[in-house]
Amino acid sequence: MTTTTPGAMIEATGLRKAYRKQVVLDGVDLRVPEATVFALLGPNGAGKTTAVQILSTLIRADGGTVRVAGHDLTAEPDRVRAAIGVTGQFSAVDALLTGAENLKLMTDLRHLGRAAGRRVVDDLLARFELTDAADKAVAAYSGGMKRRLDLAMTLVGNPRLIFLDEPTAGLDPRSRRTMWQIVRDLVADGVTVFLTTQYLDEADQLADRVALLDGGHLVAEGSPAELKRRVPGGHVRLHFTDPTQLAAAAGLFPAATRHDEDLTLRVAGDGRVSGVRDLLDRLDAAGVAVESLSLHTPDLDDVFLALTGRPTEEKVTA
Image (cartoon, rainbow, N blue to C red; front, side, top):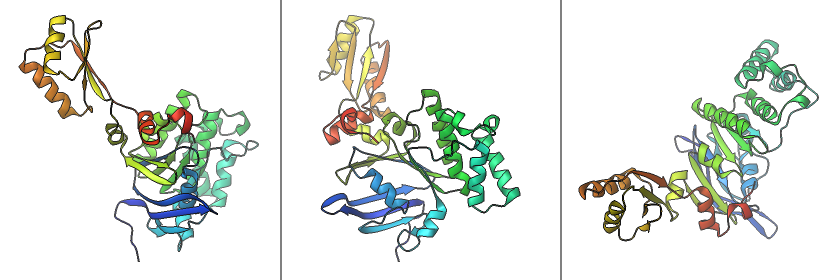
């Protein structure tokens, strides 16, 4: 019997799913380490939603093996469900109930008992900064408050793994940052987060690893920094106050792009510390004085463009 690699919350090998002749997932391999944020990104129709539905036991795969939280997805679905929580794109809260009543409903469904349930409700209200609004109808909540309550309800069962689908869709910047901090705190407490999002800056901010699905295939995987280093365009921009110093630097780096009008020199580089150190050592050894420098690396939008051939605003959505 296949066992889960130590430290892996999810392991999927050869995951396949098709609807009639349309292949949605075509041999996808995934490994999600414990207590990390794993972001699954991709264009519409790439298979993201299908993958999440399979991993959260909502639908069956046509092929492949999957273990979640140490349990075989096919043979032990109930054990998998006991270990996970799912927060969908749209808040699954009852707008006619208060925040406290929504949470109490979840504790009742979990059969926690009156005293234990009350402790859980009070703790989650405080943790998600909803205590002052506990007795207000959810219909009066802001979008950010509803999302926080939705996630709090997911945590009633102390899941080890949470699937977050578009957790900040439609939220204002302040609410987005609040949700980001909540996710970071969850991971610090040992929870694993499987994230899908249309905001690439969100994946860049939160994800320890990012996987890109396209056409049912996993076309790239790595940390945000690793993926961005695969795309050309990174550079160090050197700023000078003296044209003679600019000319001297340009002589050291003949492949660099020189801009005399603003006294800058753009030297190709991937942003690694060792590369920047070598560049500065060469300048120092030649006695070239640099006023300042700035690092410019490709972002995840550039990664999508390079790997899928289309910009994210045209193709990549939730």
